[in-house]
Length: 229
Ligand code: GRF
Image 1 (cartoon, helix red, strand yellow):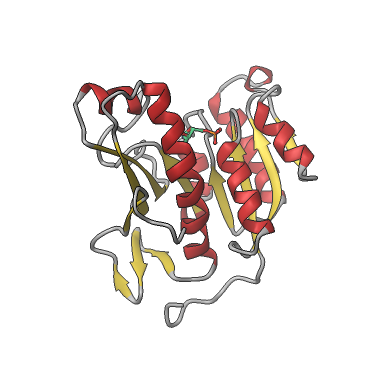
Image 2 (cartoon, protein in one colour):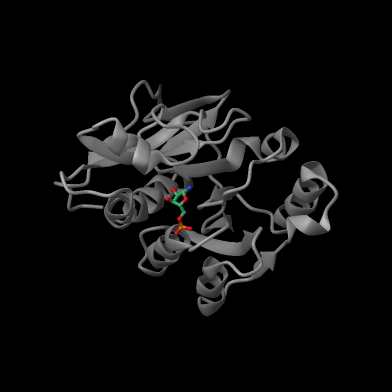
């Protein structure tokens, strides 16, 4: 816990935003159930009304909001409506977990100090889409994922944690993506969220602080060898 930082009431209130399969959401739910993450999911919001992740949320008894962008004139009005649903849930943290829609800068500013994302690459490498295929095409020996604060610049916010695995000779982008999800993302995101809700990591004046120091280097876990997370 960093001195002088008011600790939010526990368990921390999370709103999770998804678009697809919800495997990161599932990992967060399991981390809460097992006591690794002292949090409660107040709302799961989704921009695709038939997303598989919504089923996971409902099975876990979570409140959901599926909001269809087609019902809105533009990105700003959709993001305003989404933001209002989120704000009504009074979250400590807004957690992007495979949320595949670009956020307007007004939305990012509204939740700026409590908005986090997981991106499937070792940022600053491979911002944007097709990260697994790009890592393979580049012949990378390792591939990973990054949890970071969200700023208006896509996939460029300050890093909280990273984790990686070795790329295998026979990997396709599908096998690499699946292994990264299971071995890295589903462990990395709950661990990074625990850093935040337990106050080990603080975001202040656009910088990440860990252990009372500005974090010069982001903690990086090798998930080929790590067994503790
Ligand atoms: C993950 O690879 C995540 O890093 C990326 O989108 C994917 C979402 O998967 N942003 P899921 O919906 O959590 O299964």
